Image 1: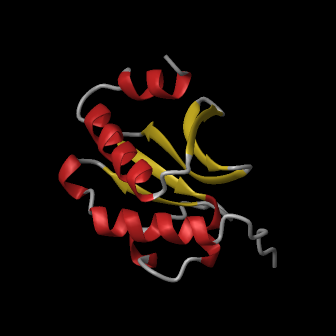
Image 2: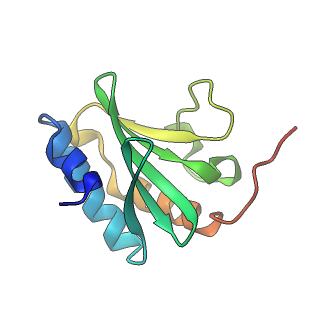
Length: 120
């Protein structure tokens, strides 16, 4: 078993079910993604470009996106939490996952996957 898959399957409920649900959404939306294990969490990449990561921390699932500074849709759903370049969707309960929003943000992440960080 791959380390990223092992990470997901070792999580307690409801986080394991939430991660599996998100995994299905991500892989159905972007079939060319590759699931890797970096910095001790599952990461999705297309080629050499990170799309998102999945992390269970502080009582929620964090789905982090690198190119978020370019996103235009659903900004009200993304948390920056003092991070300069990464923003994330956060889920405490399975029913909070809104598939249409996840798909929209994934598509934005894919569109901007090769953009450089904007530094001010």
